[in-house]
Amino acid sequence: MEFLDKFLHDLDRNFLEDKRWTWMLKGLGNTLLITLLAVLIGIAIGILIASIRSTYDKNEETLKKNKGAGYWILSILNGISKVYLGVIRGTPVVVQLLIAYFIIFASSRSDIMIAVFAFGLNSGAYVAEIFRGGIMSIDNGQFEAGRSLGFNYLQTMIYIVIPQVIKAVLPTLCNEFIVLLKETSVAGYVGIMDLTKAGDLIRGRTFSAFMPLIAVAIVYLVVVMILTRLVNLLEKRLRKNER
Image (tube, rainbow, N blue to C red; front, side, top):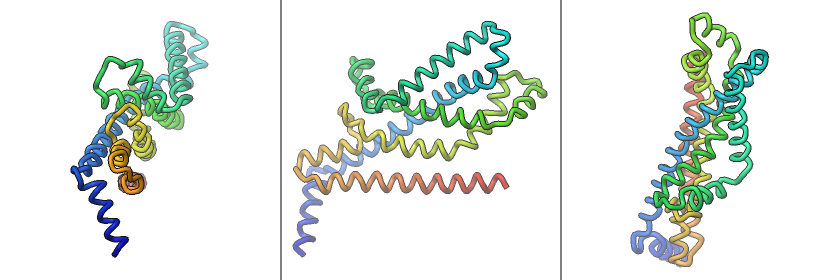
């Protein structure tokens, strides 16, 4: 009974008093919002970067023979893409978030959108490699089929290759969403009320670390388990459709 009384007292002090549970709810909402918008930006950037890099890799020999304007434009874009991938993948996401908040958008007060930009830019580098791997795995016969239909290279990519790649990498993209969800836990570094920050604020008010931080861990675990289950169902559905 003594343990139960202490547990109920801590529960009341950490979550029910002053309705501190609403902080957790608001933090979870912000975490999911940032993750969703960031992964959408990441997919857009990833498709663009992957298309540039895979186009250069697949047509490098042909382009080098002609060395026309297309070769130089594509070479520059490929170089920029490599620099972007190297910088983003070579630096911690928390440092990128701090740079976005205190340097790039220092005059802005839209904290959520700054976080979306920073995490989206970070996610784009990893999504780009996912898509590039998918594009490079597509048989060259698909490109030849596009030409036989009268499509140019860009049209072949849009109408034939990209739809196949998306289907192939969809489970991996969903896993990227899960990874990104956990990475957003550093958003509190710039004062954003995400789930982790909410737990830390409760700890600061009650001076009780165990219950608020364990609660944050449990919420993350439950959300990740739900998303993982959905990814598994998606993979089974895709395998079933391939039969």
